[in-house]
Image 1 (cartoon, rainbow, N blue to C red):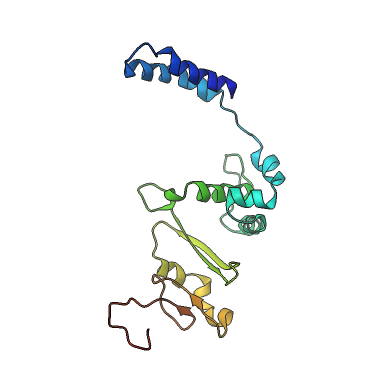
Image 2 (image 1 turned 90 degrees about the vertical axis):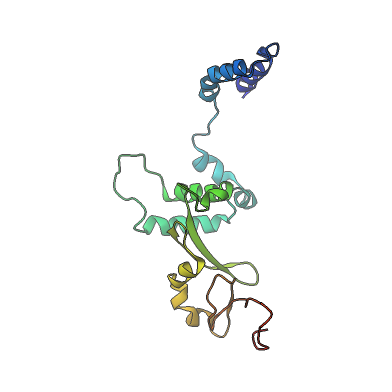
Length: 195
């Protein structure tokens, strides 16, 4: 770290007498490989550092409780999507894969929007009045409308069994059903029943 700071300090002071931005750019390009070569990396972050996090620290870094990550990793390792054959690349554990996804989703949220060549995946989550997750469906890479994600989720076909006499409050992107209540658009002509 000290070495990087020293290089950067030299970059900013060595050309102070020259007003040419071209000279500064050339100098930065010349020292860039040295800066990158000395970049500190934590080789065993997932294996050593992450397990030492308190539950609060874990949630701060990954935005989900540790138990959720562990459950997702267990399900992922048993799924058809987890590579079981040797692909020629170093195998990444299910736990590490889920940590990578959670970290990326937390820190690179803008990249999940459907912009050219950006990673995009739809997730539908249902929580109760105490903000506890009750159902999560992850799927459909790319830009997919919320109504389609819901229609194709396992929850859509089991609403009556899961909800009983209760209902889910959803936004206007979802279809209004017996167990899914969505707001009506008020253009000034709502009936009394809909109000």
